[in-house]
Each structure stands twice: as structure tokens, then as C-alpha cells.
Image 1 (cartoon, rainbow, N blue to C red):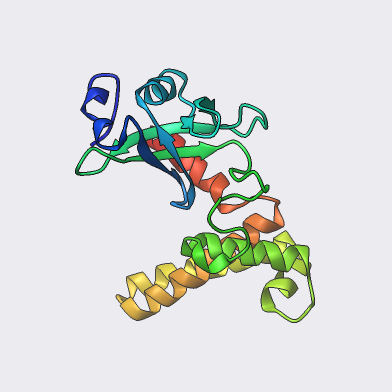
Image 2 (tube, rainbow, N blue to C red):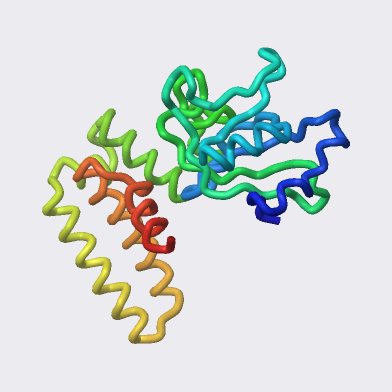
Length: 205
């Protein structure tokens, strides 16, 4: 159930002495960013300010994520589970979520634990930042954005032709090639997948 000003009283705070766990997920990529605890006041503050606020058990007070670092979590939506005793917050991070400077508190470096397109984007970024000259991605990036753009055009045409020919297997393969080359093109222009997802998110709203 989505939580707003009209139904937040349905959250079951009594089951765990006034607190409920709150999982924070990136609203665009699905990456799990962190877990905290909220009481009724933290939920109200989150809804009022549209920034995630938790109850800090160590400080024994409300704590707005990013109050020191400036790396706030902008609220997109807040939901309860089927028992109304835990929360899922979809948010847009304004910088690293973890105090260690990483995107997520759960996975600092392991690409394999991220959503698949994020994994691929991170690999492309890694190839760009630390080239060894041994991969196709590195060679394509070295040839520049015009070559990457050419490949996107070629793969786009091949994807369309496969669809017209009603070749489902080829359509899937060409679509995979198109997505990959688009990520390389974005990287060549110092952009990334999240920039595109942000545009789609804005259009949906």
C-alpha cells in the first residue's frame, strides 16, 4: 500500500515498540541503497519534507539522511508491506548513500549484485577509466563517440529489420547489441543510464 498523508496511521508501529524497518530502494534502477528505522514522527517528516528521515537508535532522535553530508534521499514514494509493519521507500539519491562513499550500504564493489543494466553500465565505465586495451569496449571507446554513434545506428537498423522479418531470436539478439552499444555511446559523452532513466521518470510524472 502506498503511504500518504491520508493513510499513514495504518502503519503498525506497536508491533516493534514504535519503530518499523524501512528499506530504501533507488527509484530508477531498483538498487537497494540502505535500511533504517522509522517511527511515526519520521514518517511524517519524510512526507512533509519529501526527504527520507529516520529515527536514529544510537542518537535517540530524528535523523534526516544527508543532514551532515548533503547526500539526501529524495522521496519518490513510500509503501508498506502486506502486514503494515515494514516500509519500502523509493528514492532518488543526491550523492552516495553509504557513509563509506559508495552508492549502496549493501554492496561497495561487487557489480554482480546490481541490476543487470547497472552491471553493464559499471563495466563500461570501468573499461573507460582503466583501459588495458584488451576488450572490444575499450577499443570502441578509444575510437570516439562518432564510432559509437555509428554502431548504435547500425544496431538500430538491424533490430528493426529483425522485427520486420518476424525473426524473434534475431530481434532479441539485436536488441541486446543495441542496448550495449547505447551504453557505450552514453559513456563516450560522459553520460550514464541513470541520466536516461531520469528523463523517463520525469516524463511519466
